[in-house]
Image (tube, rainbow, N blue to C red):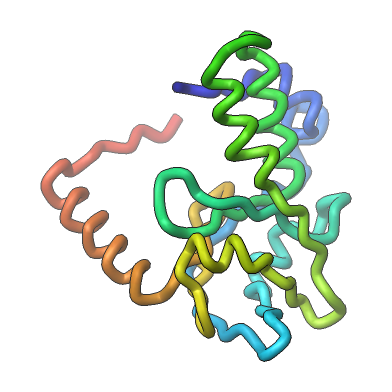
Length: 171
């Protein structure tokens, strides 16, 4: 299944020519943080800064359906995903699956005054996170992992990239 985000959707969501100066959410680097006794965790300052121009003062999290981690993104990126699914057939079984995993599972979480969020217990369980988590930048989105699981996944990715030696074209 492939979802494309058209120029029309980009225009509607502020990524078009008339809003070319609008700051895009860009999540870079990796940060390990601890959950406190109340289940709160600090979102990295650079991630908070990436969404500071958003209307929604927080992030959206949902269970990854490709890894044992939590996916995270800005609300405007989630709106782009919703717009992309509008192009799918109303009775498409892939739309049903995607909606069940993406939209039904999504949790909009606002930052508290110190930049923390409370990650719901079912998301923590899915990712195997107990006391520490690592926030991993992925460009337009980020993931939250159990630190040990991420080390393994990152090593596997490195090995895959060394074998495949992909070529990235910049337009």
